[in-house]
Length: 400
Image (cartoon, rainbow, N blue to C red; front, side, top):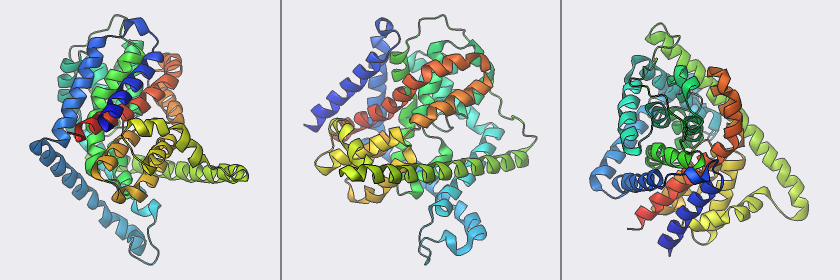
C-alpha cells in the first residue's frame, strides 16, 4: 500500500507542477522521465547498494568529524555554556548556530583555493550530459549541493544577463530546493542525522532540473558557453582573508537564522494564543491541510498529521523550525520514516526565500530583477516540490 501511495504522490507532485507551468504544451516528457529514473538510481545507490551506503556512511562520519572540531573554538569562547550536559543545559544559539560559523569559514577557504569550484565544474558537466541542460544552469544546480541560494549564483554572476528565463528558473528552484553546507551542522545540532541530510543534498541537482523544466520549459535560444570560468578569489587577497571573511559571513548567517527562529516561534505562539480561543492551534491547522502529503509520503497513524504539520511549518515558517520539531522525535522513528521526513523537509523553500532570492540575485544582475520577481512565487513552490518529490523517490526505494 505504501508503494502505491508513494507512486501516486509522485504523479500528484508532477501534475501540480504541470498546472503551475508557464508553457504546459512545451513540457518535454523525455527530461521528466530521465530525471525520475536518475533520481531512483541515485536513491537506490545511496540507500540499498552496500558500497553506496558505505560511502554515504563514510562521508557522514567525515563531515561529522570535521564539524566536531568546531567544539574546541566554541568551548574556548563560551566555556561551560557549550556543554549540553552542564547545569545550563542545551543552548541552541551556542551549541548549534556557532557551528555554522566554522563551516562557513571552511567552505569559504575551499572556495578560495578552487577545490570546491573544481568539484562543481566536473560534477556539473556530468549532470549536464545526463539531463541535456546548459552548462550554466547545471553548474548552479550542482553548486546548490554545497552553497546557499544566494551564494551559488555568484559562481556564474557574469553570465546571468545572458541566461534565458528557463535557465533562471533552474537557478531559483535549485536554490530554494536545496540546503547550503554551512547550515548542515545546525540541522545536525537539532538532532537530524547527517547521513539523512547528505541523501537529500545529493538528490538536489536532478530534482531541481526536472521540476524547473516542467515549470518553465526551454523554448528560447540558449547562449552556449563552451568553457565557463568560475571566479574563486572574489575580493579575497589570500587564504587568511578568505578565512576571516568566511567567519564574518558565518556570523551573519547564524545571527540571521537565530533572529528568524525567535521571531517565527514567537509569532506562532501569538497566533496560537488567538486560535486557542476557538480550541485550535496553527500546528493543528497545518497538520490537517498538509496531511494528504503525509499520506502520499507513506506515513501511518499519528505520523500522517505530524508529517503534515512539519511540511506546513517548513513552507509557511522555515525548515529550521520544522527540523527542530522533527529532531525532538526522530529517535523514536523507524529508519524509513526518519529518512523520508528529513528529505521532505530539506531545502530553503518558504515564503521568506522569495525575497532573499530576488534581492540577492537581482543585486548580481539588476536587468533580470523583473524576471526574478515574476518567477519567484512558482519557483518557491517548485523548490518545495523538489524536496517532497525526492522524499517520495527515496521512500519508494526503501520499500524494496
